Length: 319
Image 1 (cartoon, rainbow, N blue to C red):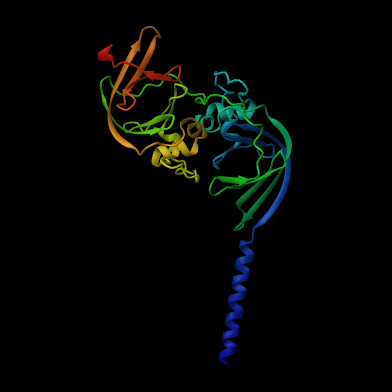
Image 2: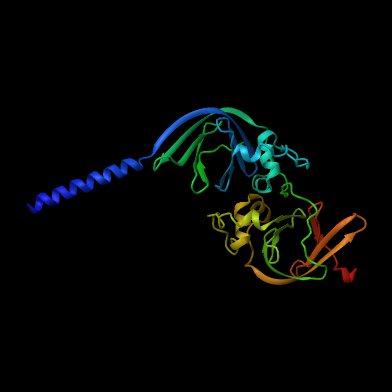
């Protein structure tokens, strides 16, 4: 009798478990639709016609979806900068997303070439009733990617396009003319880190991260909203002996924006907290305001917010 009761309870438990497993079994549905693909320096974009949405897929593994309702009424690509030689400025829906969302421009950079039209194969894997757990998308190259819609990540076999023509790393198109909102002569609480080919500065008062490329004389500003929500440094590669992989906010910018990694290389030392004297002045020759920092290690550096360039200069008091 005791063994019969145990058998009954085991049968009930197996039945309940089986029903639960059945309810959670992933259900897959495959459809096809017209699509467009465009490859960029830092990733690629996919548009599919069934819903009209656009996927922005970064080489670092981040996947962001822009529904048609989000970008359709935005202006056509408003960026007026001309692309470097061998690069293309995106148009149509890709241009609206790229041109109106600075985070997309910063992450992807310029396009290698125009859009490619193809028929996309989409496989939706759903579980727990109708929850979209995974999305498999085919690519015009014949590869396939898998998007984890819960974690906003992607992985897969990608032929990202032609080997890029070497060009000096440069900031992506950006809003010009920005000057930090501090008065002339202020002392700014900052953190600084030196890299193989430049340095970074984080400003406590705004959360901005400035990236200075010593090889090109160009700089780029990352507002806090551009990097704060991104993953901690996702680069798994270990640095060479004597060099450092950056962490915290610098790590987010360096690890999630390939242009920064490519331009700066590895860090040569850890972060250091500094009080940096800040200078802003109206340049009569240029007819707009410029600004600068006394960085100690790199000396006094002056920034041109319209050209996106920086260089060494004498402090105002010594000029």
